[in-house]
Image (tube, rainbow, N blue to C red; front, side):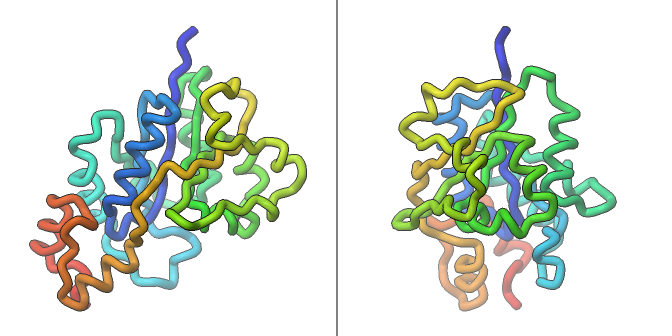
Length: 217
């Protein structure tokens, strides 16, 4: 039986940038994904007190950024949710919508992964999906914060291709396949200070930011 491989890549994407696109492209290739779901958050629970750009703009920029990525689809699963879900709730909803034999991955940055113990229902989340942990150049991926039972689930990038995958067994894959050292925070600062963001975001995204005068204030 052929097993579909699907990954969920969530984030604020405020704005989406070339680093995000490179992550999507790299994990699609490295993990032989059939589909990658890019999931803009409605308003992440840990950022509810911060100013977040309107969900419509972040969705539109995400679509523009991935027009040339045939296996990447922008999902509205969180934007359409009335209750602003936690990550574990989104993953469980996704699993309910996928075929039973689908191998599901959750893509997360190393900095967020190091804070996983502070997430709502973290143990439930850790045991409900495979993880793909990515990092920026020069940054290590820490795993000492994990319990022993999760430590045993870690698979280094070099071993990922040969790992046996099952819908009922989950692993944590550590990967350093991303080379862009850039952040949305820095892009917002650059726009605010009148600096060019060419080369940091896809051209259609730069045009969108300019057209709607985002991040000016």
